Amino acid sequence: MTLRLTDEDEQALALLADAQGISKQEATVRAIRDAAARRVHEDVVRELSTKARARYADVLERLGR
Image 1 (cartoon, rainbow, N blue to C red):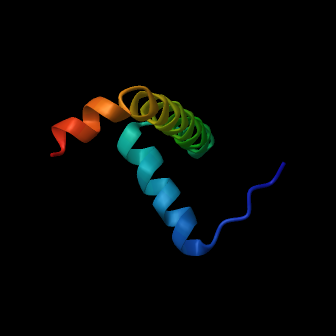
Image 2: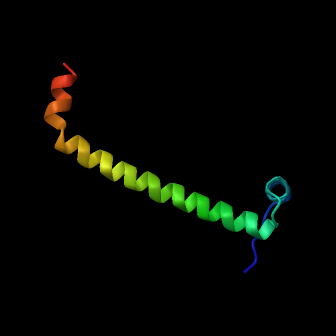
């Protein structure tokens, strides 16, 4: 697989890799995994928040008065 980057993105990737002392390949993989983990975490938090708001709606309403 080939990753096509703009010159600006290539430079940003090189800076990221250099800062972490890793290859650009590893920096790319880590960035993808980090982004995916954040997205999954945000989705879980959002779902739990929705459930908690529904479960405690009456309490939250009373506290808001």
